[in-house]
Amino acid sequence: KRIYKTMRLRIVEFADELQDYKYLEDEKIIALNPCSQSFLKKRKIKFENSLNFFGKEGHLSILRQSKKIMDNVKKFNNFYDKNNLSKSYTEGLDNYLTFYVRYMLILLYIVDKVIKKYNPKEIVVANSTLIENFSYYWSEKDRLLGYLVKKYVKENNLTIKIIEEKKRKNTFSFNFLFLSKFSKKITFYISYFIFKYLFVKKNIYIITNDENNLDNIVRKIKIEKPELKPVFLNLSFKGNKKYSFDILKGSAFNLFFNSFLSNKKEIKSIKENLKKITSELYKNNTLNREIAFFNVDLVEELNIFITHVMFKALKELNAQIYFLVKIIKISNPKFMISQHAHLIGCAFSELSKIHNIPTIVFSH
Image 1 (cartoon, rainbow, N blue to C red):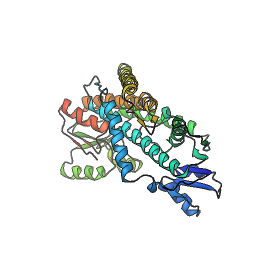
Image 2 (cartoon, helix red, strand yellow; image 1 turned 135 degrees about the vertical axis):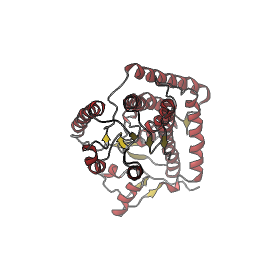
Image 3 (cartoon, one colour; image 1 turned 60 degrees about the vertical axis):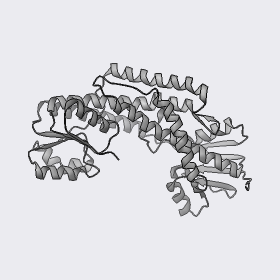
Image 4 (tube, rainbow, N blue to C red; image 1 turned 90 degrees about the vertical axis):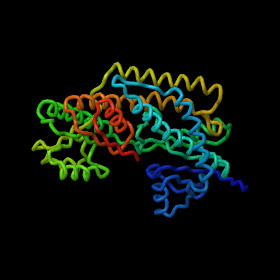
């Protein structure tokens, strides 16, 4: 195999990491995602994509290793809430943690191949997001490449200088998020009050939202059974406009579904359950070293994600289930529909059995 001797290597995930980019002729660029590749292509800057570093063998390697890691987690992932729901929590943790694990493994696989091919003296990467600040549903701000490059270099005893470039921060984002959350909370409580005390709850059915062609299903139900009224957990902006007249005349409702109602005792139980998982992973990994890849131990990264990010996700889910059970008990819906089967979608199916409500959950 030919070994390249490149002084400086830049690994890029997203286009916004190049906002302050200044072209250097002796810098080799590896662009991982189509958005960064498009950015460079438009400016006629040479780059190499990830296809040369992540092919069939890469996919197989990640599938095998992620299964090993997740098998370790599944041994200890067991939780029941006060409504006797379990799968919504265990499957939720399993699905989102699998995404996160595979994201780490894919990046490490590519980093390993890139470094072995080019043998760089310097690597330029974007500054990473703190793992505890990640969003479980994968926000566009979540980045881990720089962090993993540094850890790979350290764990493999390589003498490569790592240059982390920081992205410009939006100074207005904090205030905007605070105001947005406050307005959502007020809207949620007003909506709940109207639904509980003023809305006529006869002949209703509960549906998650109006997206993924669900509005077409609502239209067909209205033709077949005009007396039935949809109660949406949430409507899109377009849906609010479309159903505004129906809402005003009381033939539809938007719950502005959120996670503001919570049960402190259950939140404590969720936290304890996740701590049990992480403590077992620490013990288990010291024996078999299965939670590692290319000499990089990933137990700490897994445990931070579980205790912070997945705690936030399951706490939110618990509050949503707590609220949904209240809605079911005061309205006795004819049936329920969800266009997905994870987290609250999975809860639809579990609650349908407990409360004997016909339910359709579309998995995809």
